[in-house]
Length: 387
Ligand SMILES: *Cc1c(COP(=O)(O)O)cnc(C)c1O
Image (cartoon, rainbow, N blue to C red; front, side, top):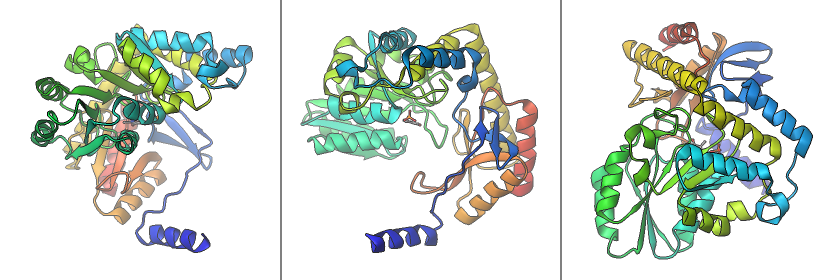
């Protein structure tokens, strides 16, 4: 074991891929305090600033006082509180589905749901750039006898060929995709995917982790944005990004949710999320559905457009970003890392993303509704000087 550990760590060092944690003294949707310095935080997924919204914080604090810090058991044992049921009803009402199921994290929602829905004989088709949780869910489904096939990012011809190949042999076909891709900030062509699925008798599962609360007229996600909510069978998302807390969910038909309640191992064999976490999520969904939520969404969109426009005007490569997630592609790892360090010197925290998380190194700049135009313009000037 010692030899294995030393070699594996050396190998990471040699390839410039060793990762280190950067503990912050404090972070919200605008600022991060690092080594006593306050930086502008362009590295968070807290897109609407709800982690620090007074109503959300108060809901969590009072739930902790009333119900304690921990749930004490798994959901099916004695861990389900009225609060969990209330959250699930609120998620279903928000997403416009019959039912919904909450998981402790989004990762667990994916890893639990995909194998539960696609076992022996099924085929699971995935976009190459899907989030790791979906890929891992697909791998588990494959262990259970499903066929897992990955198509190149956004390659609909390839997806169609896979559907043609499998629609006679697999009794169940499931297309799984991020709706808003987490490292490129581009949207999946959901109408196209739904067309293909319908032509071949496949079901569609979308992961709205970054689109929940941020996309669509009412913040319901990219499916709302594209007008395809009714055509998507499995709506997955997280409570951890725009909703500002922690947790994941699947929303869909009553039978779908009932099956997951019985078969999703990440639901069955883990302790229920604590009351403060659940109360915070309920409060956050309420904010998203009000005028205040709409205003925050509008500010987010304006900020994202300002950032994308500014980077493009400076001839920086932002790929196909169409959202609040804006990559700045810098293919050389060392250079990318030194630009990230330089930005930090100048007061801006951004993500520095390397393989294997992404194929091409990039800064990942994520803007929120809490940034001011001056924050964004200051960042653009610093980026222009450094890159
Ligand atoms: C963050 C993320 C997840 C995981 O959600 P958590 O609640 O953080 O576990 C799943 N899918 C995508 C696309 C994500 O970005």
